Image (cartoon, rainbow, N blue to C red; front, side, top):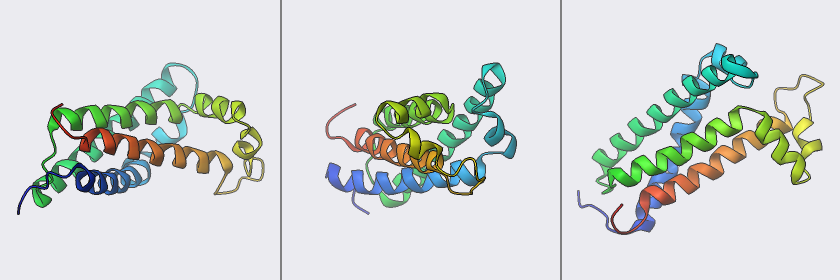
Length: 151
């Protein structure tokens, strides 16, 4: 298979890969204990969130490596490391809960953030904002990974 040199092709493939791996990492790989503890204050919350982000990022890295090998995407691994760092850092920030809640309040989405929480709904405004934040940053990470030139 020929290696695409077009960064747009790499971006499209990388965005799909990182997004799919995001969903697997956030819902299948993350442990129940991590999900419950990652937003708690203090050391317990930081440790649970860091453990979740480590396995999440490993899942994205493995998916990216497998797809690059199979599809011949021509991914430069310094760019991959930078893109995965973007994904990991932004994932950690959102999953600590308070920063995302504060941002939602600052941009006028505080009421939406709290939507469904008191009713114990499965789908909440906080969950929707969390996932849209992650998916948006997966796209940014994909652009970093796929960019032209040397990294």
